Length: 57
Image (cartoon, rainbow, N blue to C red):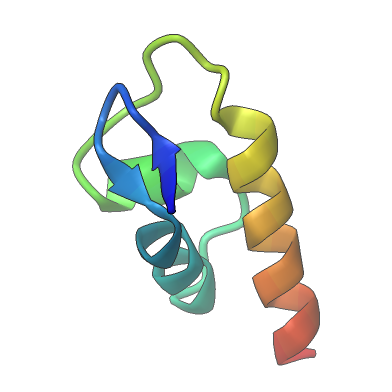
């Protein structure tokens, strides 16, 4: 599933970044060499990161 159409970031990319230790969407995007543009994807990316972090706990 596409999380960010502006940057072509997929759900698996965000989840992998979360498993690597990022805490927020901005860090996840930076780890992928990108940054948010329109910002509509931020809430979904935040939810994915929280889900991955709670699954790891």
